[in-house]
Image (cartoon, rainbow, N blue to C red; front, side, top):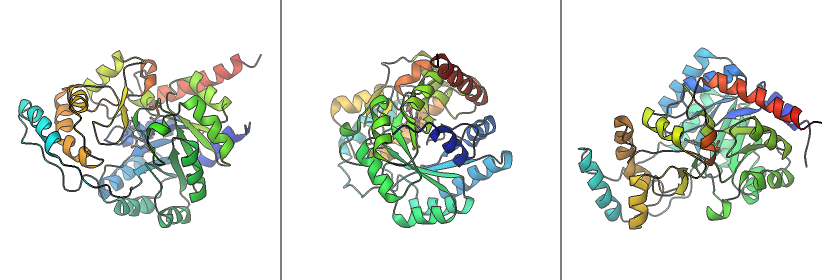
Amino acid sequence: MMDPLAWHRFAERLGTRYPFIQAPMAGGLSPPDLAVAVAEAGGLGSLGTADAPPEAIRQQAKAVRARTSRPYGINLFAPRAPVADGDPGPVLGLLARFHAELGLPAPEVAEAPLPDFLKQVEVVLDVAPTVFSFTFGIPDASVLEAMRARGILIVGTATNVREALALEAAGVDAIVAQGSEAGGHRGSFGGSFEAGLVGTLALVPQVVDAVRLPVIASGGIMDGRGIAAARMLGAAGVQLGTAFLRSQESGTVQAHREVLREAKDESSRITRALTGRPARAIPNELTTTLEEAGAYLPYPQLHGATRALRAAAAQRGDTRFMTLWAGQGVGLSREGPAAELVRALMAETEAALAAVRD
Ligand SMILES: Cc1cc2nc3c(=O)[nH]c(=O)nc-3n(C[C@H](O)[C@H](O)[C@H](O)COP(=O)(O)O)c2cc1C
């Protein structure tokens, strides 16, 4: 049920001025600079370190702590039961053309596409951020117990009520309810991702009614109107990703920023063609070619196969082959310093709430 105090209570729990969370964004998009700027402005900054080796996570955590004593979070991808690898032939055949075009060595399937989760966890326990958040599933109980014992708040991601109940049963402290508008990967782990394609407006109140934990609304929230609406739905906080992609301190490369500036409500799609997991991004030659050919590999095998191309394309500013993450709210995104965005969001939220009061 709607708890009018949930908003303030959750901010108090986080130790922030407002329960606004800058989404962790893997792939270098949410570097320490961004987390520090958001934390200093009164929100919760987050490091998206799911694809970072353990030592890089330590360095990033140190970089945050060197510049702020405010709360921040670290995010990882919960490991999933291993899926049998697919035949990489068709995908590598298509990628070979693109590699040749950019003068890259022939594509290959990476041996270990992701860092070791438990080694990443060891570093998180060691650096002890305020929040440990995760997506794609639920880590083992031993991991969650260790986090709790270190006094770290645990935040899991759900895309439907079933996943939210599973997270509550696992003992998390709060739940990010990720609507289908969201940019980046779907967090879905309970059944097919299509079944988790619930929009934020429908998802948040149903999760709020189903669990007794603070619910963090996420997906398509771009300004004070969205934040005020999330609060009306019973959310105790909000998590914004796409809104920060054009912030000065984010790791978004210039070519991606230019695409985002022009993007609109209908520009993004959910595709498996980037990493093997459904994720929302702006389509390009890479995604449409793999999709049209029906060439597919499971996650993280496809992630490992496309990574070299996507990284090289990002370096060169070649939008045909890069990862152009974006949520459906992208048409409302703004550029500028992240602190200015947080301040504007706070002011807009107050104004939106005041406007409907009488
Ligand atoms: C570029 C990008 C990368 C993301 N990476 C992560 C991630 O590493 N971990 C995670 O839990 N969520 C990740 N997300 C999802 C966000 O946590 C959040 O659910 C989403 O950004 C909310 O929707 P919005 O993009 O419309 O604000 C990412 C989102 C974006 C846009």
